[in-house]
Amino acid sequence: MNISTAFAPPFKLVAPFFVLGVMFFLISILLMFGSNLETLHYLNSSTLAWVHIFLLSFVMLIILGAMAQLVPVVLEVGHCAVDLYYAIYPLVIVGTTLMAFGFYSLPILLPFGGTAIFIAMSIFLIETFLTILKVKKINFIIGTIIISNIFLLLGLIVGIVLALNHSGIISVDSFKLLKAHIFLVFFGYVGTTIMSMSLILLPMFWLSHSFSWLYVKSAFYILCSSIISMLIFSFLNINIFEMISYILCIISLLLYFVQIFVIYKKRVRVEVDIYFKSMVFSYFSLIISLIFLITYLFYENDNLLISASWLILVGFIGFLIAGHLYKIVPFLVWYERFSMFVGKKQVPMLNDLIPKKSSNFQFIMSSIGIIIVTIGLLTNISEIYKSGLCFLTIGVIFLLKDILYMANIKEESYVF
Amino acid sequence: MYSKEEIFSAVSTVIDPEVGFNLVEMGLIYDASCNEKMEVLVTMTLSTKACPLHQLIIQWVEEAVLKELPEVTLASVDLVWEPVWNISMAQDHVKQKLGAF
Image (cartoon, rainbow over all chains, first blue to last red; front, side, top):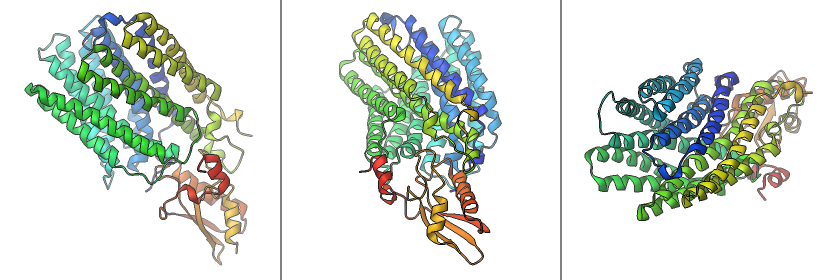
């Protein structure tokens, strides 16, 4: 193993991904105040606009920024052309903005926004695939990166076709394509990336050792089967196989949860810091959303589906990202501004760079917000839903404040 | 020639910034030796193969040996993954702090 910190991208390259990502997280939460619970549906244009803002400019932007850092660690080789990342975030922001306006009021903007996103993601994919070509031996984690990136490419192509259809340029069965797009991008890329990166990051931060990867490997293969069967059978209109795809997807997420529990049980480090709390809340949200999804398969109550989607997006992925930001940003800042003083001067520990009171307040407000919004969505009571959003907004404002604080820490304040 | 204990003492000045303990307390230093040419070889591991500070930690260990033991002419690290590190290799106060007890 020959991981070099020299392969790490400069902080000024990855910082905009994290700062802009959290800014758009805040914007997406503020936009939720305008949602009407009566018309909340996954085919509603406003919902589609919100989902794209949340997933592209928050989730994807932060995943791409994190991958800039993680790709050399996982592949054990340097980036092929890391400077290409400078072009990615402006294109994602422009593309998402155009797509949001396209969904809200001007459908003709959708292909333009979609093209900007497609170019941004293509840059990322080409850079990653060229970097993978430098790898001599493909292990399980690298295999997951290859497969997830292929899913992303296919999902982007389907997305462009959907954008052309939505703006009226071409005419296709958008319902079938929408399922393929969701499965390819959300489960195929975001889901598998979270699965594989958890195997690197959780044991590293929790100091977990000697655990079996059986559950996550099974979860990964089952999720891939679910995506492929959804692609094939949704086009063939064979409903029973579509149902099997949904069930496989739920089984995969349950197995992933079991794997996380195994890592959690094997952890050495039991410190209850902001990372640990965020992870516990995140996986708690995942399991509750899975319970909602399983219940939905039997009762088909739309409130259950919307609540489950909310919990997976903001409760699970949102907290997973927030928790990791409190680890990744201090590490990058420490590495760039303090590591050179080790052995020469007194330097702070990574933990010293985290604003503890503020991060705890952020966690409390955000978690209360998630719980209240979920109750509002389940009961379909707008007042409860919006009061939860108030808590969440305060939480996300503090998250943004903390990220900006950590990103701007200067050597003079800590090195003596 | 420097003894194993002296080399361990020199390496103990290197602290893992993530957990806040030095490498010797963590049980990451497996062995150390010094030959007649005053060349020091430290055999060590890391708590995880995916440690992004991998090469930097090796550099810190070499620099610490050269700084703390002035007669050393060359310091190098042999990074090994066998036996795999686990918390039982850490000193008791580290286990206590991390919650392994």
